[in-house]
Length: 80
Image (cartoon, rainbow, N blue to C red; front, top):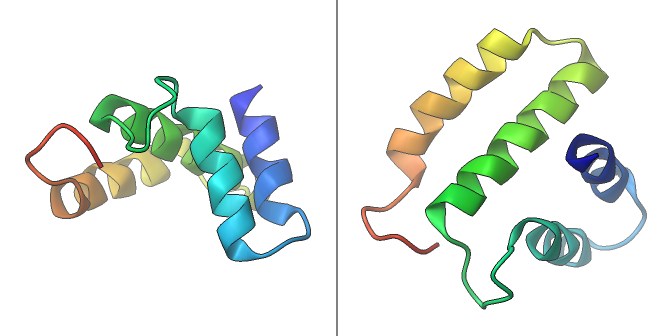
């Protein structure tokens, strides 16, 4: 379900800021102003799977890219 909603949100009309806000609301489970790292990782995983399905990219390749990006993107603290 998350994959389908993510694709619909990304391809929906509206500004990039509006679409990012909706994605944030979808994946931020604690109803806070910041997202926990596990929520962020879950979001990236679901987005990569949905784009992989849409673009016919192998899931293993996308997950490897996510692992590489996580080490560069995610800070040491718990919130993003």
